[in-house]
Image 1 (cartoon, chains in turn red, orange, green):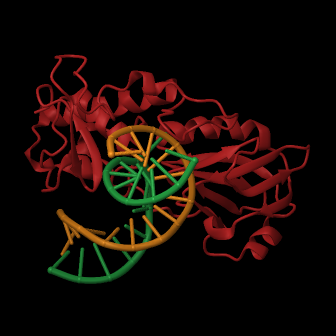
Image 2: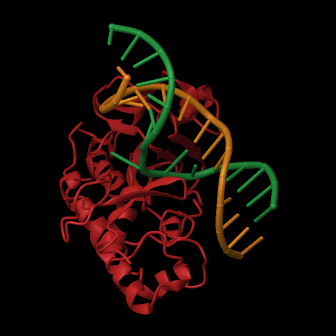
Image 3: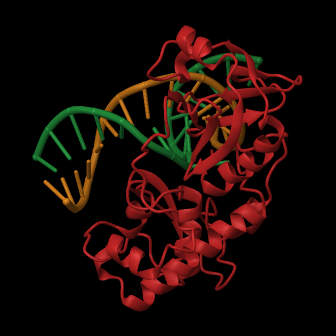
Length: 263
DNA sequence: ACCTAAACCTGGGCGC
DNA sequence: TGCGCCCAGGTTTAGG
């Protein structure tokens, strides 16, 4: 499910309710999301740990513990962090004060890991930070002979964009998703830089896109699905020019664009 | 270093 | 109702 705006929305819902709380129990219903450590050891090492912050790096959530350990959660495609149960719960973190955080993941692509210190996640820059400049995007795109859309999805190059926001940002920028990155003009890179940032910040503003699996920590849907212009709109008329939106596959992912607005 | 494709899983929706 | 098929918002890995 979750791209940068969804993970940020979840973070904002989770942090205030777990900060300063201790983990008093970890219930593991299905161990398959737990990576790099046995379920028993994960539980043992988390018991008594106090949360001092919940941070986000791209699509990862990092629970910083008072001991300096980090519980790192990635939600994959269908992962959820909830303060109530749903039908796909795999792990439950019980906190002092009575709250429990449910990790749910129907498709099991999410990952839960524990680190002794702040982990190096090997991610590219976060495009929502003000330090992310046009020059940084040009460095990423300028010399590569791959479609611009594939590069936007590469977390090692630029972190936090997934398929929905890649499609939408390219529409806002008027750039065809199959364009080879090294053919973009400086002006197009500038437009794309703006489009990425405005699309992601709108995503955060509307609390994420609930097209299928995504809900926030309270089980509430986001609203950005009401603002999508191309994503999953194959065969529908473009809202700008009425041309039929096309669906193609790029980088093994469904890709939607307006053949007239995006060159 | 760059680029591509397969693999990991389960569930929802649709047509017949 | 049931079955088969297609689709799915991510990342890792192996290979060219």
